[in-house]
Structure formats: C-alpha cells, structure tokens
Length: 91
Image 1 (tube, rainbow, N blue to C red):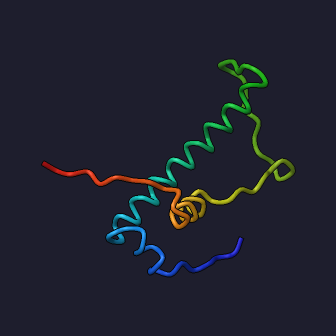
Image 2: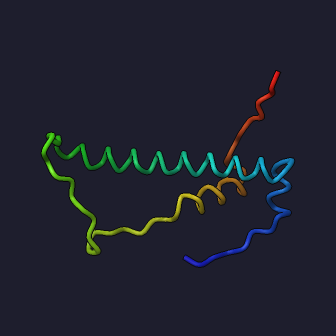
C-alpha cells in the first residue's frame, strides 16, 4: 500500500474548515475500527463458545490477512461523500 497525497482543495470543498474535516474523518475511522473488531469477534465466536480459561488463537504469519488501515478507509469514504455529520449548536 503506497502513500498518496490528498489535495487540501478536495477536503475544503466538503466542509467549512479543516477542523470539521479532521473531526469527521476521525469519527469515521473510529466507527470503521469498531465495526472491524465486532465482525472479527462475531466470526470467531460463532464457531464455538469460549469458556473462561480458553485461549484465543494468536495470529501467525501463516494466517495473517492484511487489510486497509481504518484511517485510509475513513479518508476515502470522506472524499467520496459517504460520511455524514452534523454540527451541534451550543445554546
């Protein structure tokens, strides 16, 4: 996975300021990570029920699957317009 630059103009078109952009992408990255961990937990625990003293299988190089980083996924979704957010108003 190579690095790719993102022009600020692409980000500025989506929000009023860069703080909103960073906040929206950060929140999306947290959601992506949460979803990824939940899917992993569901897939491993559906096969069998774990007991208190059962060991969880460790990841070895043989069964390692490389996935895109959650921050990269969040940035791509933000640029594509798939991320929605709302501004909260302080009263």
